[in-house]
Structures are given as structure tokens and as C-alpha cells.
Length: 303
Image 1 (cartoon, rainbow, N blue to C red):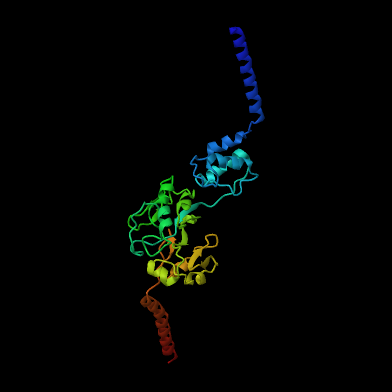
Image 2: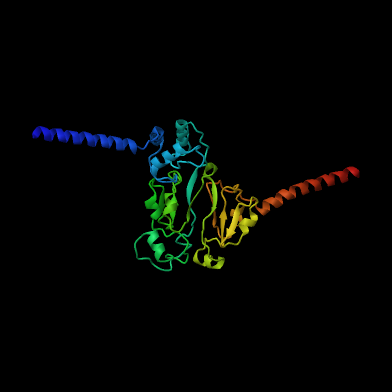
């Protein structure tokens, strides 16, 4: 009986093993070995900034795609994409580096509080309840949802202004802070040559007088910047100006005409101050004096 039982169990085990083998082959999912190779050169941040669920998802998308156009690892940037292209035998087009920009300049001085929020310190929760502690319902709340979302310690709340500030040296343009901000004031923009860029640091859609009353640094939608721009890079919609970084040539003419200082210029050299009027008059007077002296000499020679 024992021998029969042993033989029976052996047959059942063998049949089960054979069945499992057949099933595994039937439903086997083939994975291209290049996916693992691509994943090895990726930074492994799993931030989702590429638009895929983690680095493994991005690696799979790169392998399956016919070309790498539109595919970019924001954390690794061009160096990583060059390695990916080398593994897959494809060409990776150079992409301009991006950086997160906080489009709010409503400091504590410019945007005084009208009430006090005593709830959970979360921008998402506070936004679902009401507009905020100031008269501007569009600006930064300063509760740090973006700070918590950033895996690279690249964004912090400035204690003096109460506004989120981005450390561009640490920012990888993964876009986590953009998704975390319920006010939609954080935007990915081109980093620009020498990290120079110009943008409207305001998203207030209220009419000019209302916006200015709530925040002295607000864009009032006057349109002076749009009229001044020779490249048609500025549009004014819903009472607020926006600069298209793809069209902007950074001439800075718009900055000079903005009456509220809502347009910011970053990392530019100081502007050359115009010569004082007195100096201009002195420069203009010198040629006149020289001409007068020459006329006198000519008169003497004629006499």
C-alpha cells in the first residue's frame, strides 16, 4: 500500500509539473532584454516626469518606439538619453533643459492677509475649502505640497515671502511639483542660455483694480507688455499676461514697461543706466563750442 501511495503521489506530482510547464509556456510573456539594459542606465528616480509609470515603464516605451522623438528622461537629461540611444541604435535629439518656475510674487508685504487658516497645512485641502488667507485666490498658499512631492530637495517655502522657491541647480524638471500644486502656479519652462529667462510671475485672473488691491505685485492685464514685444511672444487672456518661452527672445523690453513689476527677469546682467541729462548736455555742448572757436578763427583770417 505504501509503495502504491508513493507511486500515485509521484505520478500526480509529475502530471502537475508537466501541467505547470505547459501553462507557463502557453502564457509566457516575452520581455525584450534591451528593456533591462535601458533601465540600468536610467537614474532610477521613478518620478514619473517622463510620463510613464516609473523607469521600467519608460524603458519599455523606448524599446517599443520606432524613434526616441518625444521621449525624454527629465532627470537624466541628454547624457542619459544618449546612452539609451546607443543601446537601441536610435538617434536621440537634443532637448533644451527645463526648470520649474513658480509664477507668483505675492510676498507677505505685497499680499497682506485678510484671515487666518487654522486647518490642515495642505495646499490641496485648503484649496478645496476656500481661496486662501489673502485677497488673492490664485496665488501660492505656502503650505508646501510641492515641497513634499519633490524627491530632489529642489523646492522650499521661503519663510520671508511665504512663497515656494525653486533651487534651479537641484531641479530635474520631473514635474512632480507641477502636478502637486492645486493652484497651477508652477510651470516647467526652458532654462534658457546661462539660466536666463523672463516670465510673468502672476496668474491672477481678476480685473486689474481687484487684482492690484489684493496684491501690489499682480499683473493687471494692461497689455503694455504685449504691445511692446516685437516678437509677438506675449498674450493677454483673462486679465493676465503670459510669455511664450518658445517665441521670447529675451530682449527685456516688456520688463521695462510693466507698471507693477509682475514680469521677472532672472540671471541677467545689470542694465546699463542711461547717461544723466547734465552729461548729455555737456557732450552736446562740446561740438558747439568747437564750432564757435573755428568760426572766430576764420573771421580773423578774413580780416
